[in-house]
Amino acid sequence: MHPTLLSLVALLAACVGVHAQTLVNGQIFTNGLAIVDAPAPNSPMHAGSVTQVAIDISGDGHLDQSASIPGSDKSTRFDSLEIYLVSYQTRLNLTVSSGPDLLTREQGSTVKHLDYNVSTCIPAGSYNLTFYEASHIDDQAFFSITAYPLTVMNDHPTDACTNGTNTLQDFPQLSSAPPQSPWLDGTSIATQPLPTATGNGAATLTSVSSGFGLAASYALGLGLLPILL
Ligand SMILES: *[C@@H]1O[C@H](CO)[C@@H](O)[C@H](O)[C@H]1NC(C)=O
Ligand SMILES: *[C@@H]1O[C@H](CO)[C@@H](O)[C@H](O)[C@H]1NC(C)=O
Ligand SMILES: *[C@@H]1O[C@H](CO)[C@@H](O)[C@H](O)[C@H]1NC(C)=O
Ligand SMILES: *[C@@H]1O[C@H](CO)[C@@H](O)[C@H](O)[C@H]1NC(C)=O
Image 1 (spheres, protein in one colour):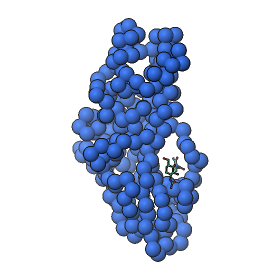
Image 2 (cartoon, protein in one colour):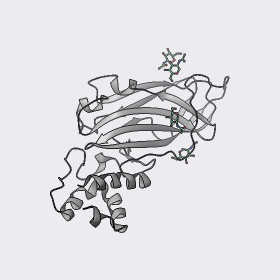
Image 3 (cartoon, protein in one colour):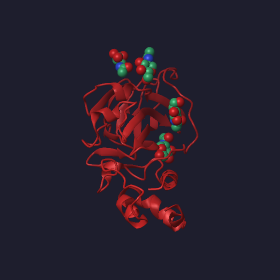
Image 4 (cartoon, protein in one colour):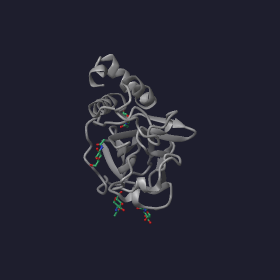
């Protein structure tokens, strides 16, 4: 595919894929590479207790272990994965995991586990567990944001949190995500190389349409595709 078209598709995907996530058999498929096993959406977090976070970084077995370590040379790979507990209700943005810690721990394991101490400083209310993923899919860069709701229960809140607090940024935040998880496609775009630019336009479009169909339809609708191909 023409590089310009790839950028266009990524740009259009940014318009349609913000904050999307899909629940399949209890797993949360982010619209990046990560698949979240726990905690379940809408589950309670109890202040003063630990909430276990578990994330499959293997695309349910499709992705080589080395692709999850930042700096990997794989065409489909994680660059970074950070998690924050965010609420526009209580106006808090708390670090659950930042930096390369999550992706580099438990090497050899396809699931990364994190015990998050829900501090008693966190006021009760509605929160989003929010995943920020920078990744490459077939060498195309993406930044996806996945947020899903959780409730914090706290009968005895202590003083305002001072540790792990971050500036709360305005909603919505910019992202450039694939239209959906690449692992949910009939033909996984991440495990099969994209067709080369030498194929004719129609064939190229058909073979990537399972992953980028929505964005490609937008491009078609705008009449841009014939020009770029
Ligand atoms: C959680 O995120 C959604 C968008 O994904 C947003 O509409 C909602 O306000 C957020 N909830 C809280 C409590 O911040
Ligand atoms: C959580 O809190 C417990 C008790 O205060 C402490 O032992 C443990 O190291 C903490 N875990 C993390 C991940 O901070
Ligand atoms: C501060 O928060 C970070 C990130 O949540 C955590 O790793 C660290 O253990 C906390 N430190 C203290 C003293 O609670
Ligand atoms: C929360 O803070 C982190 C670290 O500064 C930032 O990357 C993220 O965009 C913030 N999210 C929101 C919703 O403010």
